[in-house]
Length: 331
Image (cartoon, rainbow, N blue to C red; front, side, top):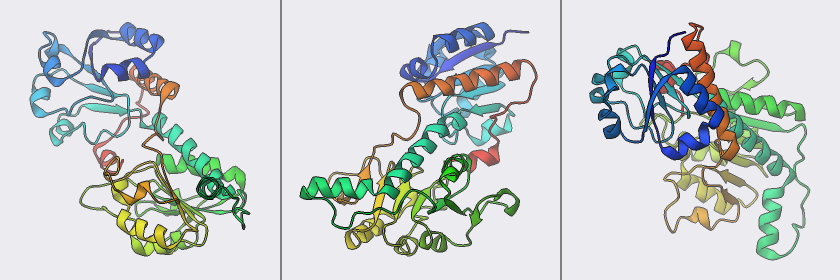
């Protein structure tokens, strides 16, 4: 098996947290690896830049501009050890036929676990009970919770994360509803497909947002009409992108209806500006974009891209290659 020239281009902290000693050693075995570069300028100074066939990236990797690609005529594969590649690639990148792999599927596992955990907490009433006890030093007088079995869960979008969430929730006997304009009926097995967001919200005890944000196309996708359709005691969870929600409408609704609750791992902007009512509302939990891989979870991203490199070097199909069309529809 040949040993192509490779190079790292990512933040040093990402290298250490995503690629453990065994993953780094395996990459060194498979590639004639260059130094770790943390900026485009550093990579451009590399004397072997024109020979690099495999670029290992991740958090901190700069955009692969035409200028950079012109200096890398041998580049054939980008191993991106993080999630969405939308910010990374350009039209020129796709035109050159370079393959790109994303570790999004591994990164999606902890997101699904976060949603599962907060769904359980929402249905048991933990969010409201904890906030009420902290504020009043008394128990909720009518605290019964909705119960975490046999409830109605709504998913906005039905991509990789939402499917993982649905798989985890089924063991509780929940009824899973989905709104996704790109979802074909043949791919909606085991879920109820809704025609409108408002209908989905109206019939869900918990709604979790998993749609990709396409700037300029679906900003504030979740607006006042859908939000106001939420039934009594419902919870909204957002781990996708803050810009997908009309936050002004959400704040107005949460002020009016203390029976509702919002768990926001993402906001727009991030973090919310000083003085934002999201900090003050008792029925909002802000978690600061922690739903993705953290700590030891990140090693699974490194293992994924190492596995993809092994497949590429042995002429086996890549399992996590991102196409131009798919990149557009990923958050």
